[in-house]
Image (cartoon, rainbow, N blue to C red; front, side):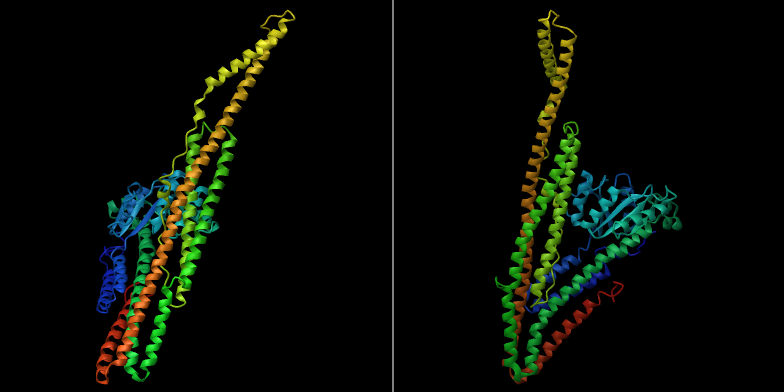
Length: 564
């Protein structure tokens, strides 16, 4: 009952699309090697590596008890080449890509975006290609679920809602409509598909195709194949087409320059001069004073300042909320719960800050690319979203309250001391009038002073704990700001270096292509008439082969995303 009969149709290694793309890149690599362009050959090698590893990572998450694990087990069986892994196995050092075409990550259940579990799941989304958000049909989306969905959508644009356990609740269509209304009101354009893993398991045992369709699992698998997996395949093809266009254009630059001189020897000097002007323009792109270099330098500085300010602002806001919570009551009895809430808040703030840094880095890349494109028409490189979770690994945990050790026994002793003082003071005064030391007035005074001492002592202990709690929060935030701020600056410098190296490499490619064009034009201008026709035929054949590769590359994409 699989939705795809060809195991290599989506996400596999040896698909028809993969073979076509690798063959195209290999043929073009042969031309770059023949031309001595190792720089362009390296670009094609990187493109080939992306083509031969088109695996996807899909995170499955939701609140606790929504049936995520059962869904993962079921959906993996419906998509050939797919695999599953628990989220806890995705530790540092384990690749985020799987050997299989599609990897489903079974994330632990969370209790909303503010929970520790929710923060842990959000950290998985840095390298996710898509997210399945699971909520059962027992009730409508809750406010925490909608807030969780909104944050997930910010971190990963490809999100699919799944309404699970429809076999247990007859009113699931009403719940689906209500959830759709909630999503629309929240501005979340997310598809919502009803499923039942239990029904599908029954259908598989009985071999009942109609029951399988009723379970909704084949529809979900088909949706993932067409929209998620197929969409990623389209992006991959588009990237290959772009690489083929860039490389073939640069190879054709020298051939076109040579052919123009061969066809019109009288204008040879003029064409050579034009090529030299193009070469000078390409050389200017490599200069430290090039416009794109200035935009990159200024933009990177502003980006670091803005990202650091955003992190400080988020942490200061969290500190104010934490201090208000601390001052509301004695923090000692609820310190563990408060610590969990604060850790989740820190993780959420860091996530949001990294998301801002990623989006602003993309904007900087666009600005630099636009300035670079004024002379080259180059494309903007893709920036991978970083994983902020490791930035918190070196952050110390919230300190325990030392004053918590002072318990009720100490306060009782202090109260007895106050009570004794009250009895003694009033008793001595009353004894002057001939009344016994212990009398109703001295006992009443002792009770009042004892109660007052107990209350004041309790207030003092609470105040000390609140002050100590504020200091602990301040130390934690200082550690977070130091560790995360350092990691953030390091990553932003990496982005700056990556953009600088990318556009510098492109400028070097352009300069090399312009040099080849000048050299080819000069050789053609100096060649004898009896050799020009033969050479023109060879050059024309080379240009024709490049055009054929361009046409075949364009044929990788059509309206349906299928091969022509």
